[in-house]
Image (tube, rainbow, N blue to C red; front, side):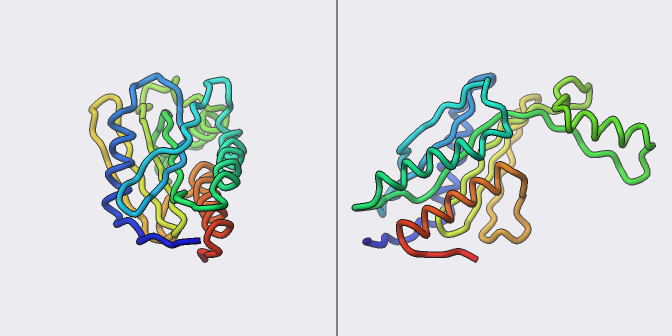
Length: 185
């Protein structure tokens, strides 16, 4: 399969930021396939994620969409990356010297997905993007201030983890392996 030059990190950083900027609060979450033709990034599949889909099911949804995209790209592939955009509520973890009650409340609220009920919660919209070369981008907007933070992680070392990011990286790595025979370690 023909290899195209790898897009510079700024190309996907701009794509992630554009996705975040276009996102309206309280709308569906999204999973996208991104394609690189050697000159520009375009969206292939945009899967809108219904609110009834539990976040623990997002990794399976990502695998399903990615598998279909890979199957459709066997002849000439432009598939290059995957982007997940979602909203969530975040709370700062208690400090090490916090009371046992405070630690327990935090863990209970985290496990029961009740951060949105807490007075110290911050609502966020976040876009993560992983490409077939093992790179990761993120952009997060706070609802209360509108402030945006963007990050780039050229390797998994030091990058965020969790089920969403791990699944995103896994589908990107698998797509790269199937379509181009490359394996990222």
